Image (cartoon, rainbow, N blue to C red; front, side):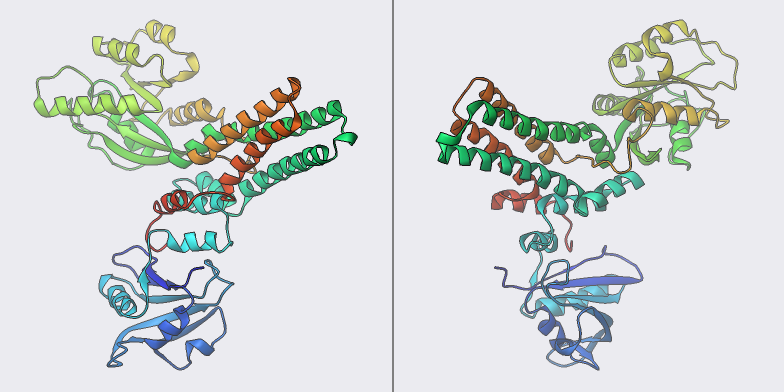
Length: 458
């Protein structure tokens, strides 16, 4: 049971037109009423109504802020508790005044994610839906948002529940045969277990096939743009970002640090890293930039190697090519508007033809080809289906893999003619592991850890 009332600022702190303070708990309406001067008493108004008035000092009744107050009564609220949202003027001072007065009442400052945590504990959403709220907030592309939104709506939960129900039927069948062994036909029971476990395994494996794409939708593809100085790396970043994020000059070594920019290509989020030109240099500052470039290169999911096709291959180019040849690589032959002096043979021997893109960043030519090449590497040209449920959460992926192992053990046990009461243990383990995804059986420490990742006020 949750008996206290919490409050937090639900909007980003800073200048803006409106800020919102959210209050939730059994005494939220009565507490806000005690500091609210308006025509109607909040304890007497209907749910889901908005009221104009002033937040006042409860001791002096001095008006402190002009507000709109929205009342949402349990259970028809996000937390399934009484919730009051106070809309104040934007800015730091107005919202601070309201929070200071609230916290002087019988109200506690909410912990990060505590509103969503209460929604989970009160049964409005399950754990996988709660975790998807984070993905919704952090989405960096339309597809990522759509995927997270479907999970918030319960797409993954419904799939997990369906598979758990199949396993529950299987366990019930086993229990009947344990209780009434005289009616058991071992071969039929074993065949039934194999059929049902295989059916659930197939569904889980289908979910796991989306894991890589789901991770990309959630976190983006970390893409390092590398090459020698002055080959057009910063110009390429600016062209992809469609704005001037990096300084571009004819002077080699202009970029001294790693510049980050998020973009989307065909709905796929990319975290672009424009790196300092990798070369031997005596400049101390440039050396630091080169080391950071090498570090970014190691952490990247995709490497875009930019070469100047107006020059012959340099020793630094060859060294880079050798270093990255085993990675996911796209080679950009830049400056195609100038005469070609680059020998393509060595490049074509090391990299596949569909990974080599000819461009003129200056003339904005070849960008479509580059975008298609990137999409082709990670999604075979695009996302499979808008209706597909993508699994991206590391915790979910680990539990799905554990469930597959348990189901494999159960199937293997039937083939080894192990007694069905022992097979039941593996089937139950898979059922419980799937249950952990939706929060059917999880410890308090895990719940606290998950919700601590949320922002304050969510």
